[in-house]
Each structure stands twice: as C-alpha cells, then as structure tokens.
Length: 212
View 1 (cartoon, rainbow, N blue to C red):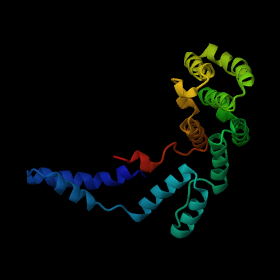
View 2 (view 1 turned 60 degrees about the horizontal axis):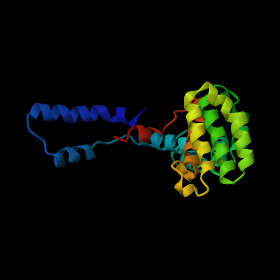
View 3 (view 1 turned 90 degrees about the vertical axis):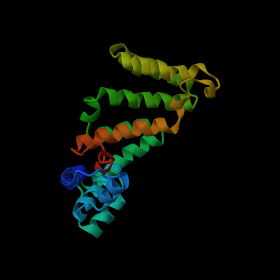
View 4 (view 1 turned 180 degrees about the vertical axis):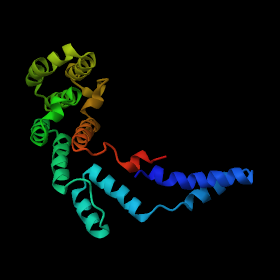
C-alpha cells in the first residue's frame, strides 16, 4: 500500500478538526499536526523494501529481510541479474548489456523499439567517445539510420548524436552532454525500468511516488 493512502485518513481527520473548529491554523500548527501522524512499522518496512528492490540493492534486501521479516516481491537472484545489466550500461559496455537483457527476456527489446534504439544510440556514443570514427559512422548508417527513416524522433536523436563527430573539441559541441556520465545513467535507468516492468514490478519506488 502506498504511503499516501496510509496517511489519507489521518490527514482527513486533521482537516475535519480544522473545519469543525472554524479556526485558522497557522503553518507551524499544521506542520506540528503532520509530524504527529504515525505510520505502521510494517508499512514503512514495505516502503523501504520496495526502494531496495527497485534500486537493486540485493545485499541490503537480503539483510533487511533477515532483520525485519519483510519479504521482497522478487527473488534476490533476479535483482542481481537486473543490476548486472544496469552496471554494464553504466560502464559503457552496451553490447554486453543488450545480450544480458535478451538472456533475461528477449521480449523486452522486441516489444520496446524506443528502448532498443536508445541502447543502440548509447553504443554509438561509446564508439565516438573511444574515437572509433569509422566504426561509428558504419554503425550509425547500418544500425540506426534505417530506424530513423521509420521514426522522426529517432532520426532527430541520431542527427544529434552524429553531430558529435563534427567537433574536434567536443567542449564546443552543443550536444556535448551526450558524452556525460549522466547520459549513461539515463539509459541505464530506462533499461532498469523496462526490466522491472517485465518482472511485474513498479518502475519507480513508492518512496518517490509519495514525495509530496
């Protein structure tokens, strides 16, 4: 159960008290009442476990299960397999990541052309990063260009990526952020979310959803 729904009845009670008293409650009083809201320990443990599973902290999941008795909604081995894919992307080993995804579930990429394109785009970025110019051009032409012809947004992304080759000094390139580690993390998180979905687990953590 989401933390939001756990807190709804208690928030409603506060609002009812406010309405019945017909008093204007100052911000400090409102915050004080919110601080008195109590969440059941079991619900909080579930939220923590959900976060650990989603973020892939396999060792922490096992330890937290032993300490609290809270069961994760997927096997620890599945978490480790997913993290192996994510770490491969974060390290720039995109081809290895694609193989691992297909080993887990070939339908993930077969049914998600946008994700597959972004992984291939990341492969192109890594080739450019490693100054394998001829290989990058060949890869872009053979693997990405045909997909760009079928999808305008893919074509625009391909053009942005290839523009990295125009600048000898990428610090002057308007799309230099594609070479940042943040781009790897973005692709890795997209893959992580797709695998979670295929394993019937929520894409984001309940803690994120309840950040209100």
